[in-house]
Image (tube, rainbow, N blue to C red; front, side, top):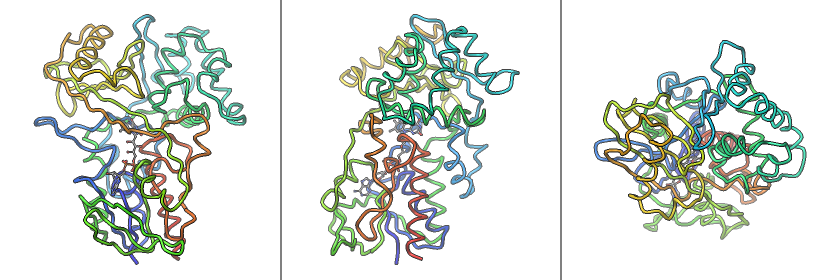
Length: 426
Ligand SMILES: Cc1cc2nc3c(=O)[nH]c(=O)nc-3n(C[C@H](O)[C@H](O)[C@H](O)COP(=O)(O)OP(=O)(O)OC[C@H]3O[C@@H](n4cnc5c(N)ncnc54)[C@H](O)[C@@H]3O)c2cc1C
């Protein structure tokens, strides 16, 4: 019997690849006209850009392995650099979290941090780093409580921890889970230099993985239906029986992986089971097109004390194109597009005076449900792959794993879920 997979984001695609690699027949059903979900291509005039700027890191080992397993040359498609994050602030001098130095890791990191934040800054950061296992052994608390209890300075909170927490958990420090941040810090910085490498895609996201994944799935006998929305799951005697699509077609199947975003999963699943719906938080990307020869002095730079949080130089894809990221809820959500573009341009010019005062063109992309909110206790609320309904399985970034909503988490869950499904069929 064919395994039905609902949702063609990175998680559903990883599930489908894993199934066909294990000799199973799959049918992947996607409601949009393209694959990729929250990491997809968008057109802006003649440009192909991302629906939102993404950053991957060296610790994304399952994502890299999955790409390699379908023939993607990961050395080719990513600009992989040793971590070198410089965060510019409106009040303080730039702070540098970098492994670039002649010193071996982690001395290189310590050296660069001490040079930009002083010895007291280095001591405080080391204190938090050495507190990770302790915080993980206790009940979860907010990131801000953790930072306070470990004596982090106002400057470090504002210029380092808050930007890192927003970038990784998409949740403000006053609400964010200390456990999840601790795990992210442990896995990205505690496991050696290459885990902290930054990987910036050289291609638009849809070309990076979804296109190659679709080709691979189809070449291995899998079927993909686009523009097909599943509106209901039919369950009888606690066993999944079929899917019903928007045009009332029925897709018969006794093995279904639901790999949709969490709110869609809630809509499909809540008639049949208890399903906790976490809050979902937005990410806004402001694209700024400057003259073709405009460049930042680094592939990405942090910004603090401003509404803008990170700026990426996308010139490798489109000369003069910058992507500015604003994570989590905030005042910017209610600003008109033109007003937000003007504000972001002014902030970019303020922190990087060599950048022009104004961009030639701007575009605002607001992803309102970018990620589930990584609030205190979230780990306990994430469901497992296997449900209590026979034949019904869950994938997607929100399903239980140690990661916040990331491409690595999405791929891990797709792959792990598919492996369990295939094992259950045997
Ligand atoms: C702006 C932005 C920036 C981000 N930045 C980063 C980053 O820097 N690094 C990082 O690792 N992660 C980042 N993320 C998170 C990352 O993109 C997601 O975690 C990941 O894409 C989730 O993949 P998924 O397959 O689990 O879900 P989705 O991508 O949401 O895929 C679900 C799919 O199911 C389809 N679907 C939904 N309902 C139905 C239905 N009823 N029938 C059929 N199909 C349906 C949807 O159309 C979608 O294609 C970012 C996300 C956004 C939005």
